[in-house]
Image 1: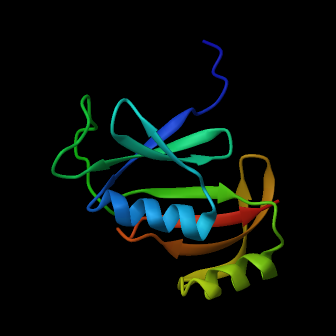
Image 2 (image 1 turned 30 degrees about the horizontal axis):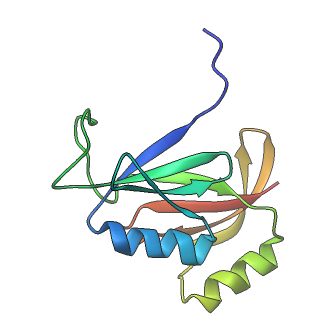
Length: 125
């Protein structure tokens, strides 16, 4: 098998509109509508799909739960600009900046939580 990349992930959330607003406004991710009325945001070449905890899209993971995701997004911006941007949206940085190791080497990262308390690592190489 020749795996190329991750196409999308699905976040189980308590309120899709609230999640869309957060990812679109804070991270400037474009909102997508697909399969009729399903919602997602574009994250680089991948997308993040949203589903409601009490109405998940089938097939579904064994225990879809809001707040159980831990993901890292890579940005081009320098970390001081990232921190200022987050502060301008009143997003609390819960850790960082710290040095981490990503898929392609050393990262500088800060950590925040989305509206469902998913852990979002914002990093640059």
